[in-house]
Length: 365
Ligand SMILES: [Cu+2]
Image (cartoon, rainbow, N blue to C red; front, side):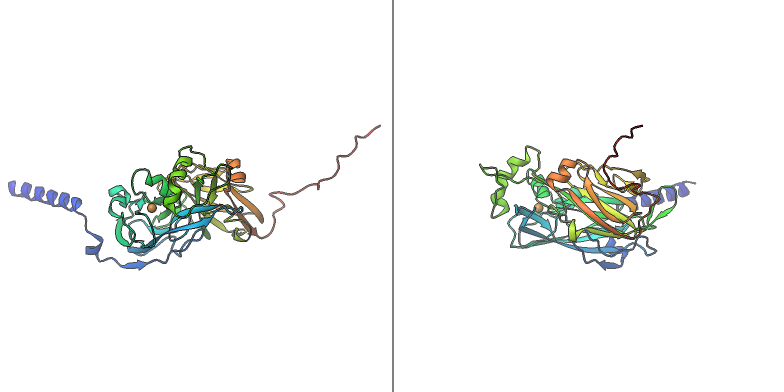
């Protein structure tokens, strides 16, 4: 009896020990897959659902500090970026995969940088293990244990954190359930296209005459920029790095009948995406796929420091504005994108019964 009890105890102890020291991805000898990232609004090729087992997904982000133009007036901005784009690229993996990131800070940069993945567990989201000076690189691996869309951003400590974030160092990861998205009632949901929109609030200092100032390096811009930041009133709120980055010839495209997944991140400030003339059929406002999506939304809410996902099947052709429904920010500060949708108009959903014409004179008897 005692022997059996002892055996049971040692089995329990072994189980606890196994729980305490999970196998490393290396020991599991998982297959590796190298992913070539692409600049937003586009997303690298990926399976929506997968029959394959977990993998180690290899990504590379190179930090690029550079001066960019952020509006049609030629206002310049000392950007700090992951891979040269604002936001940084979207990384897509499946639950149970490992994200293995090589972060590179070339010696042409002037600042230390790191990366905090909201999807990761421990060490400040990896921030504590990835702080690198110009001329250094580091490799971090974390297990994707939670599904959803999650922000990543630079977080080098203290006041450097908000400054690096609003200078452009933010992006998102999408961890898909292995069997793909569903409506929360067991029905699979699929997308024909996926776009990644990263919203960015910017704080550009002005000179004594009210004109936007230009600087030669991030360090030179810091003191003035921090002063504008502390007022919490952005001079620009843009999608994908500059006003009108996603309008006109750069409009997002779709066809009538296509279902589009729109991932929207805001690493620092709240936002309220709204598709003018359309809806959110299924919206994971908080971006977390273990919760059922809301349905039929007019406007949704993106909490600062999170990424949400909205699925919509376009039913009419035309130009749709996708805005933050603080319309002052959308029209005055830059937060407007366009979807250009081609296909056949549905008169049943909407028709102009009579074209605009003069108001008829009142009938006299
Ligand atoms: Cu940084």
